Image 1 (tube, helix red, strand yellow):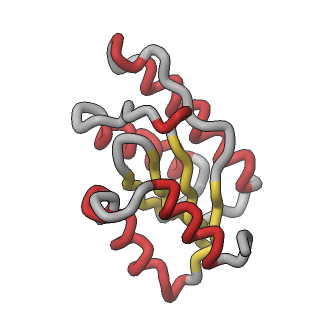
Image 2 (spheres, rainbow, N blue to C red; image 1 turned 90 degrees about the horizontal axis):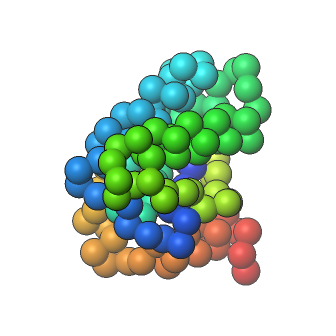
Length: 136
């Protein structure tokens, strides 16, 4: 089973600049692989991340997500003075992804920079909530 996880920086502050974004995404992928999630794809923009991952077999999703957010936040704070006040938002969205849609979702995650030239994070997240009928 695959999950598409989406969460933002606190206050949508654009901390994840070009200097650190790839390092942060790689760090998150490593965290997930160390928690027995064998498939991981991470992408995003300056103020949020998308992670497609298999949900593993040993931990509950809430525990996996909590650890990724906590450990990556600590990591980001070590990357320089500009990141010392970094925090993730309190919540997140986790959406199920069928194996047949995995490649399509991974491609979508890879194109986040281009995608957000046309649509805001808020518009994107609301569209996901509507798609999964969590918002009417």
